[in-house]
Amino acid sequence: MNSNLTLSEIVTIAVVILIIFGPERLPEMARRAGQLAARIRDAAASLRQELTSEYQDLAKPLQDIERDLRAAKDDIKASLPQVEDVQLTPRKTPASDPAAAEARSAADEPGDSPADRTARDDDEGTAETAAS
Image (cartoon, rainbow, N blue to C red; front, side):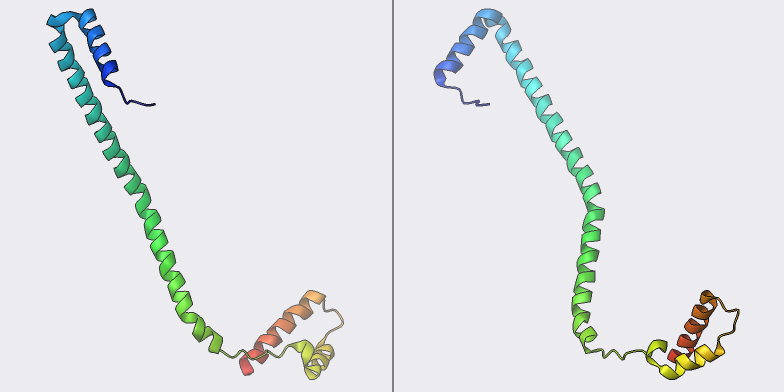
């Protein structure tokens, strides 16, 4: 919407208003138009302030989360060189230890279910890890 009025358009509108309302009612109409414009301006400012306040109330928790995530990212980046220095030692598994596998098969009882054997293997693996 283009609100640029030329001088001739403004003069034409003023003449039409003068003809419709007459010279005696023109000052009153101008005063009412000014009051209406002031009320509209005040309402727009109030709405803008209210929306800004609501936005800030909604944005504050998001900004806090963003700050926390950035801090966590920085902590992780700072700890990465330390993680690279850690040497991992392979854990001895029952499958890789033939002596442990033979001892397990000798300890199997005829009525053992596969779940019983798995539970016993897990217990033995935990004990072996604790011993190392």
